[in-house]
Image 1 (cartoon, rainbow, N blue to C red):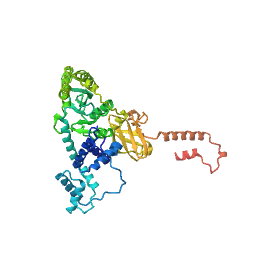
Image 2 (image 1 turned 120 degrees about the horizontal axis):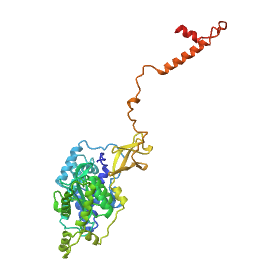
Image 3 (image 1 turned 180 degrees about the vertical axis):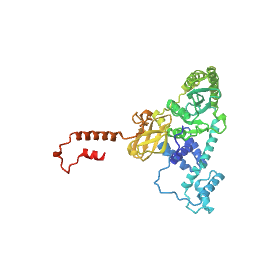
Length: 482
C-alpha cells in the first residue's frame, strides 16, 4: 500500500544525496591520509570541493541527517533565471560529461567565456541544484560507489561481526504457496546476514515483495543486534526506496550497492539461499500451509540446519587467512558468539522513529478531521484549514502523528462512529407514509365545530330575549350558509 503520493521535500532529498556522497568517508577504519585522498576523489566525481565534503562530514557529525539538509531561506518570490536557462543547463551537463572532474564554477566560467551567458548572471548554487535535480551529479556518484564496492566484494569476508550486513529477497518458487484469505499466494523470503560470521540476523517469509518487507527486516535486525558499520544490498527497487535510505541515514548506517549483474559480490547470501532451497523442497511435502505455519517450520529448520550446523565457508576462511584447520567445523552461531568486538546497541525507540513514514500537505477539514489512507482521524480544532504533516507506521495505522508548525505534535486515532451517528437505514415499506386523500386534522376540527354548533342551537334563548343586533349567532350563520 502506498501512502506517500506527494513529491518528497527537496531539502530532505538533498540531505540523502549528501549522506550517500560522504558515506564512504564515515568509516572509522580509514586513516587520515586515506580519508583525505578518498575525499578528493569523491569531490572530483561530484563537481564539489574537498572542503565542501569536509563541511558535510562535520554537519553530519553534529546534527545527523537533518544537519545535511540545506538551510532554509526566506522566500524571495520566484527565482529569476536567464531566459535561455534550459539551454544553459544542457550545455552544463555536456561540459560535465566531457570531463567529470569539472567543478560547477568552472562550467559557469566556460559558459561566460563562450558568451552564452553574461558574467555574474548564473549563480553556482542555482546551476548545481538544477544539475542535481536532473540526476546527473547523483548518477556519477552512483558509478563511483559501484566501482568502489566491486573492489570490496573481492574480499572473502569482513574480519569481524557487524562490520557489514548483506540483505536480499528470495522468491519461494512457483510451487510453494500459502493460503491467504482462501487464495493461494506466492511467498518471498527477506533475510539479513552478517558478512563475517554468516549468522542470520533476520529471515522471514512474506506474502508480498514490497519495500515494506525490507524495512521490516532491517528494523528487526537493528533493534535486536544494534548498529552495523554498513549494509550491502543490490539495486532492487525495495532497497533503493527513499524510506530505507532515510531510516539508515538517521541511524548513521551507510548503504552500499552491489554492481549491476555481479552475483559474486553477494556470494555469501547467495550461498545461504541454497539452504533455503533445501527447506522449500521439504515443505512442498507438507501441502498447502498458512504463512504462520511456514515461518514456524522455517524458524526450526534455520536454527537446526544452518545457525547451529558447521559452515564450510567459515572453516575455509580460517584455513586460508590464518592457516588454522578446524576438523570439526564451526557454526555461524559459534563464530558470532566468539567474536570479541562489542555490539553497539540502538535505542529501540530511535529505530522505530527512524522507520516511520511521513506525508506532507494533508488538509484538515471544517470538521477538524484529516483523511489519510481512506481513514478519518480527529485532530484539534485549532488545526482546521491547515495543511499538516502526517507521520505514520505503514504497518499500523491505529495511531498517527500530526505535526503543524507552532502546535505540539498530536497523536490521532481513527474516528469511531456510534450506533446513533451512523447513516440512517432504509425505512421498511410498511413504515413509509401512505398517499393521503384528505387532511384528517382538518376533518377532525370540522367535526368538532359541528358538535359545538348543534349544542348551541339546543340552548337557543326565548324570542323576547333576542341578543343585541351586534351579536353574532353562529347557529343562524351556519343554517343560512349550509
